Image (cartoon, rainbow over all chains, first blue to last red; front, side, top):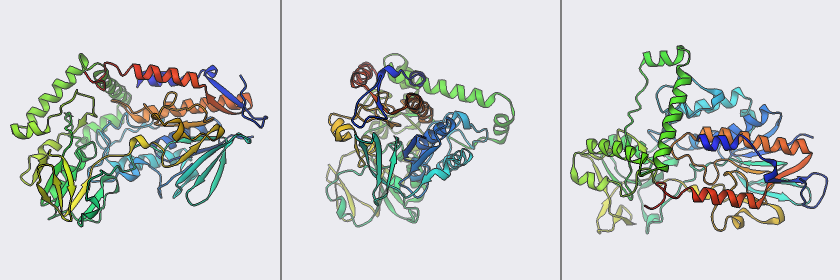
Length: 30
Length: 444
């Protein structure tokens, strides 16, 4: 439990792409 | 504009997610629940003897700890009452839409939003979807030749027929997993005759789970620090079980020895001991806590059958040795379709790719939560997140916080959604799979 709990305490945004709200086609922003 | 979140499932996970999101300003949250009431696993599983096998001081939310549990491991109705109280106290109960079976969740590449549709044709749009459908409520029924021909009464343990009187009946129980070990001792005292069909034996550890004596309850309730100490102690105990599973050749030997001693003490008949004894490493299959199951098998009205079930007739369960075990009722303690996760619900992500396609080679998700190509879709209690020895509520609280953090990043950037990078998920899965090596789940 401890290890998984600890891992979930931080979210590294660089591991994700963000879908922009304003564009109509799927794209990503940093 | 507020972030609209749909949570599919209003069990422990769904309630945890809704509370966490609302605490952090995500107020537009709706929980869609298949059942007429919320509670998930604890709504469906009401069989006699149903109880948690994790101690309640740990099997409870960190932010809603109780000091008045009736016993170490609470029975089903006490857990359900607890969930209702927590949901009510946090204003989540009024967000639940009951009797709503979600049939599909579809991502729209144009609007960058989700459409969630129920089986009766209603629809909701959402910026994010949390799938908290659980694993322990959809019955898995065995494929037995002639099962449909059986003319007696039958039901699965998760769909217990409380109106059916077992007294004076000849009853078959198929399966000896975590549910069966709880209800078999109850059925054994009611039925005239009980035949238990076992495919695989279990490792047992003792648990009487008697109600706390009044002085113990008073100490837990009134002495400062005792509740917090119990929770910490139980956490460490659960961690020690995980350690035994991760290191079967070292720490696992302690668990094996403790279990073997207990089982030998309970099983005085060598023939029954031989039939019950598991043939795999301690911890590979869920270790069961019961001081009542093995004694129940030794009652004069109970028989344990380990020959494979090969068929059923109008009035009997047939085993490989050709014996017809005539019974009035069959109770399936055959577990749940845990590998189905949220299916048969259809989920389609970016480009119309379905989750079935994404999981063609097996279910996987980054940290058990995120699947590449399914933006702002979050799983709770997803692949590889079953605890080996701990409390799933601890996990689900942590998952809820992670999901909330993800949505905060989306909100802070003014983005529409968040999507895990495929290479990150692949690397995470590689690491997880590699760590199975040498555990009790790895063939030695």
